[in-house]
Every structure is written in C-alpha cells, then in structure tokens.
Image (cartoon, rainbow, N blue to C red; front, side):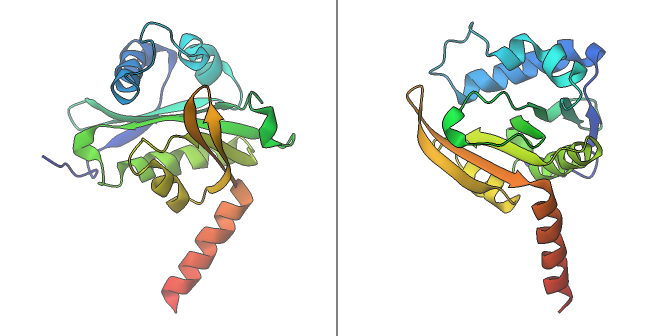
Length: 186
C-alpha cells in the first residue's frame, strides 16, 4: 500500500531521538547491505551524536507519519576526505548520508522532501558543497541523485564495492532551480 506525504512531518533529530532513530537506520542498512558484517558499525553510526548532532555542519532529519511512525531519514556530516583520489578542495563540504525511505513511501516525493529540507539546513550552515556516494546495486539511487542536481565525480571500486561518487555545489543548485522555474513559465 502506498501512502501520501501530506501528513508527514520532517524534523531534526535531537539527542533524545537517537534511541528510536539509530535502530531504524541500522535495520535499513542491514536490509540494503546484507553482505556487510552486521555487528561492525561504520564510524558515522558508532559516533552518531558527535557527527550528526554535535558537529556544526552535521544534522540528521527524520520523517514521521501522523501516528508518529518513523518513515524516512537523511543526514549530513562533515566530509572527512577519506577518498583522496576525489580531489575535493577545502570549500565547506558535507557528506549526504543515510537517505532511507520506508518502502510504502517510495515514489511519493518523501525522499525529495527530506533532501530539500536537508539542503535548506546546509544553506543555513553556509555549506558550499554536498558530496555523496552510492552504489549501482541500489535501484534508482543514481537517477534520484541526478534529479536532485548531483553530477558524477568518479566511479570506481571502493573496498570491493562499485561506488559512484557525486557532488553538487549549493550555488549551482540555486541557479538550476531558477532556470527550471523560468522554463516552466514560458
């Protein structure tokens, strides 16, 4: 059954939300990446509070339906330059991470709504670049991020995973949306 996003609220995750949000994220990760060692969490999940809540450029958003059920999440954290081959300069850069949307809400616009809210937070924090990586086996991910304005930066194997590296400059996003709005008025 598909649901509408009209009754969805998107809010920032605070420290008291972590006991509900973190298990949701871990369960989604296990579902999407069954090949990973489930009990070995990546740094961003081990240090969730420090990276997503305490860091100046970090944030994590949650989407809940009218009953309070968690139906989607997205986060951003300071980019850590762990991919030196990407040649990312020192502009204020964050990594967009952990966009997970409940299957019943996919193709409803919830992913875009979460990303748009995250972009607004990034602008408020004077972020200049959004970076992310995804994988070809995640159905529709590359297409989704391309529609959000991201462009391909690199494609290569990272730890035996084909990995798509993408980025977008915040000021280019504003220009792109202005151009699309002008084209719609013609």
